[in-house]
Length: 337
Ligand code: EPU
Image (spheres, rainbow, N blue to C red):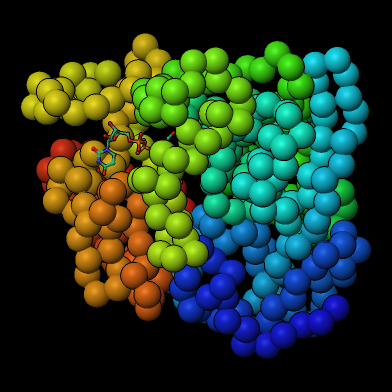
């Protein structure tokens, strides 16, 4: 186990924040992971996956364990289904592209989401009408406390909108090591109901879409709206879309009839936080190196050398302004460290 000291995490978080790990180790096997978790020299541990859903507001005074477990394996194959296991350290988008190359359907709407496979279940990644929970069979995790291995079937993960058991009840207690998906070979469950996808397919001249076509449409939409973390540090949507009661919504709608919304259930309505932030005047704004993306106000960006604290201060300023204007509280989606 090769432990480094005072190690810069700038290239390990998609915000590109130059915070440091007091100790750092990258693990490529389950036994290395267990060894790192059991290290008596470093009592505090911090698990780092793709670094795509966190904002580092300070240095990490712990042993940072970077999950670098790799591998993709077909577990079983039937007429129309394939069950595939993928290790936590694989890059999410590269895995999606791999499945599409094999002709498998299911993950196309989740193309180009930054981060690694192991982080995907934690926040139940979702886009354009599909969430990870719709395709996942189970995931495996190692206990931080004693290194024991556990399998979590889908139902045990308590998935919700950008939420799972790993984000609340079991927060920080398990390291996800692998995820198992069931994908389709022929009869695909395609989701093209999002207006943006339908329009993009039309632009591409496609009438009978395949999973690959949908992935191409999603990639084009995301590239137009969302910044590439390789060129502009960001963590995707910084805030969750707020869900409000029908009663609050009726009041809101009389004041802002033009606001977009999605019906979640008979009693709940979701309002796009991007719209609220844009209306509050923040879209494209820059405060030093911390900013709000010019094409999607839900995304905060690091123009180069912003500190995590500067990004956090901007987030708080936005939260306050949105609350003052609309009476709605928007909560961060990213983990604030
Ligand atoms: N909008 C604005 N101004 C903005 C941004 C959005 O008015 O600056 C409006 C749009 O015009 C549209 C509505 O808000 O009417 C929704 O926008 P969009 O379709 O871009 O989706 P979103 O609700 O802002 C969510 C996810 C994204 C995901 C897209 C597509 C959350 C927090 N975000 O964004 O996920 O890609 O839907 O499904 O749910 C992520 O989690 O990192 C992420 C990018």
